[in-house]
Image (cartoon, rainbow, N blue to C red; front, side):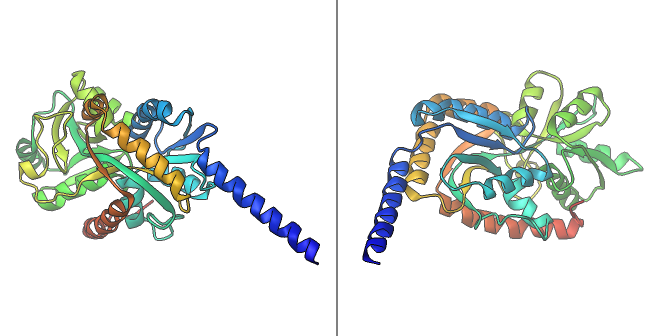
Length: 321
């Protein structure tokens, strides 16, 4: 029995040492980046750029795995189920961590308990854009167009319950004029429809939408809810008389239970990247205001924002399909 006990203790000690050495050597192999959007969507563009800066610091490449759909729930569920060893990461957004908990009673993940919040990249607006021939250039002019129409003004978003849908509902509730939601599946589809004139007004994520505005393909009317650094001449909701200011966020997440040494290594690498002048400038192009925050603060904000957006959803009767 003593011999068996010694063998068991030695095995346990060996396992513990191997685990500690694994944390010390992290990362020793490629890291999987699970992307919540299709290629060309916001998280895809931002995370691919971010990894070009993280790879030289961490010494390992990233393998991209696009899992779009369900407002980010498919990607977040995959991350939740991954081994919490630091080799599976994702960019969580307000859609996945605030809107989804509002929409789904049986969401397969908890936005705080099932993740390790490594750190916030920054905040971003949602772009309200229009076809170039649309007779409005801001919210005041949009209101005039809407009031003259017999039918509710149609606007597109990238899905029922998306951040764009919620931004449209805020506008409808606080402006007094009627809007009708036309859901598409992805941001690129909304942009294509605006360019073609199939819809005249729509919400896109700021990263892809800003590029289309700068290329002259569509025009910007407003940023929901605050101003964006990528389009400094475009007023936010608050600037244009809509009294609702809740920022949207990009946060680097891993599964819950990540060892602190691994999380710290990632956090330090992220903060180093976010302090780089060229990254700050590039994030401005993406519409992101670089605002690093630690995980505990991020989790507090997520819980507060869920309560605020739940009230918007209740009044607007926004429910998941």
